[in-house]
Image (tube, rainbow, N blue to C red):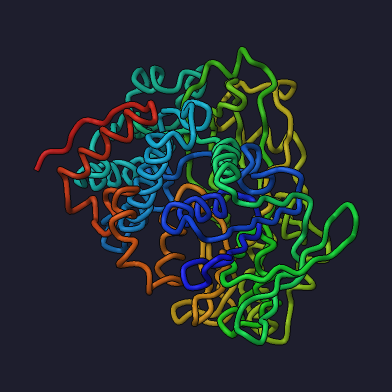
Amino acid sequence: MTNRETSKDVVLIGAGIMSATLGSLLKELAPDWNIKVFEKLDKTGGESSNVWNNAGTGHAALCELNYTKEQSDGSIDISKAIKINEQFQITKQYWSYLLSKGYIHNPEEFVRSLPHMSLVHGRDNINFLKKRYETMTDHPLFKGMEFSEDPEKLKEWIPLIMKNRTLDEPVAATRMETGTDVNFGTLTEKMFDHLESQDVQLHYNQRVDDVKRADDGSWMVKVQHMDSDQTALHSADFVFVGGGGGSLHLLQKSGVPEGKGFGGFPVSGQFMVCNNPEVAKQHEAKVYGKAAAGAPPMSVPHLDTRYIDNEQSLLFGPFAGFSPKFLKAGSLADLFTSIKISNILTMLAAGVKEISLTKYLIGQVLQTKEQRMEALREFIPDAKSEDWDLVVAGQRVQVIKDTEEGGKGTLQFGTEIVNSADGSIAALLGASPGASTAVHVMMDVLDRCFPQYMDEWEPKLTEMVPSYGKSLSEHQDLLNEIHSSTARTLGLKEKEPVHQ
């Protein structure tokens, strides 16, 4: 009989990268805990973790201009970029640990080196990019970044973008060779394969319909089998709701006061995908531009090399869209059924505040293929319509909540953990840079939900993530060591060491 003092029953809802990460962390820290995973699709990583449903950038804030803001005095605030880069370093350390233990194999199937670049047009934007470059290269995390506005140098870096370009206005770019392309779907699959070998129970085609408190304080999780319509109840000491856009409904059903007041704003994405291999192989980088005025951060245009099933692909986008679904495989009623008495004022306030965003999304939905091609031609001047197809990408649900800074009904871009006061349930809401920061976010879940174990777990956490509890920005020797060790384990390009 299992000793209830040492063992816990854990339920993870959703078989994406977040549940895979939390499940594998818990299996290392508390191997005798019983873990069950419920996924309504017939496979792991089918929604936001799927390779076609996210940008796979390995967000390290190397190229995303929306993570670095110009202040009123002209200086560049890179604090958000530092934070996101540190979080991605944590993720890479954990992947390295999994590989070194033999829990997952063949890193080239899910991560590879690929330059990350920022590209701008016009003198004002170039001045911003140069200041950003100078500020970032002063910081140890971003040493090695290059800047150029020399057309000949840019032809070396981005030949497809510079080919047949009429230089009516100046162009400049930054480049970081140590960027990555990540297939989070493949990684998720590898992590769950390992978890299943460790007796974690993975249940497909099973939808969680309800989460309710039992009289003894545990949770009763009501699960419906999608094929047979049979329902079952599962008891859990701890529940993690990691169901992407579907998390909000389950958080509301749990009844925990911490979940009240949250709303969700669904945004869908579409990409143009190059169907001509001769064109795709002329470009090998992730190149991010500047977002259009009024566009949400997730709509920053980028021309992305992707490696999907070991084949080089080329994607451009995203083009935002609107659907009331909270998941790609969700229901058209999702948005309406998420509106409750506890969040209706917040949702209404957001509706008034975000009229310009709504107009932008409607405009994006109504675009013709040729209008999308015109946006692409800002990156590839001679792009031909017949070489490109439109693909619908993932569905994201941005968090709406009341904040001190933004007031009532503020739309948040990013991820948010909501947990009960006793730590027995946690839900992950929001979107980008989600997957890239999964290990940091799930360690935050551990800290919030299992504070009584953290001292006991600290040695193991430090083994899995050597920088645990430390800022890499402030420990340059450790930063150099981690850059080298993770690059070797993951088969990535090594970065030049940073000197004091």
